[in-house]
Amino acid sequence: MNAKGKVDWIAQRLIDRYGEVKIARSDPLEELVTTILSQNTNDTNRDHAYRSLIDRFGSFEAVIEAPAQEIAEAIRIGGLHNQKSIRIKNVLARIMQERGSLDISFLAGLPLDEAMSWLLSFPGVGRKTAGIVMLFSFNRPYFPVDTHIRRVTQRLGLVGPKDDPHGRMNELLPPDPALMRRLHLQLIRLGREICHPRNPDCQSCPLSKLCPSAV
Image 1 (cartoon, one colour):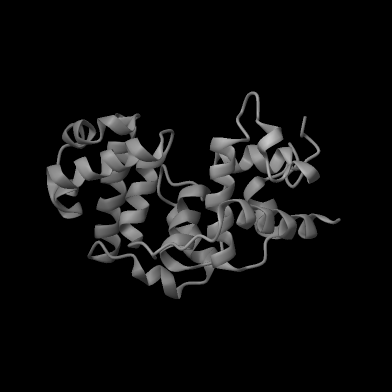
Image 2 (spheres, rainbow, N blue to C red):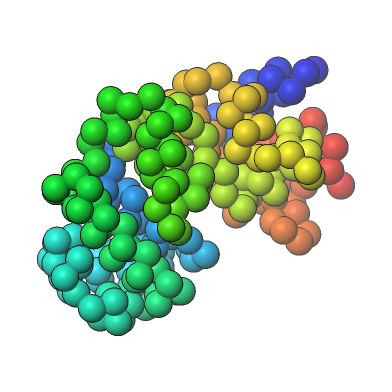
């Protein structure tokens, strides 16, 4: 079975295990801020940090005007709060300066590589963050790779230890946003619940049949 055939098999096994995934499209600016908050933390702390940010300031415009230290205090539960506060404040301020409003819907009309390049020009925004915005907010076919997905795909032999995981996975996957969203979320779930960094539960893994790392 070649690599693309293996991806198709993996996608079907994950549907068999977890079922279909339906995700409502998210607001792109909210997605951008939320994904910055998600860096090096879990979903629960990310969501608490985002709610705290909005409860404290009420709007992203108010966040721009707030001192970075006050932003940091609001998002403390998300971890790395001093770094993230500066990143969020600077990203929002630059969008306002460049676009005249906090609206990044124009990205929908750009070629995918140009939209990605624009997002990647912000300090603290990497390919995972930019890719999540494009995939989940704009329904654009870019597959974001986080630490769980990187670990799982390397163990499955889809991504080599020296490969660029984003480049490799976007090469293997068809440009189907719905498939990419489902596979993104289900591979993360597999990584959290079964394919742990240490002592993976290979006996419970729906992909063990084709996994060269299975024990």
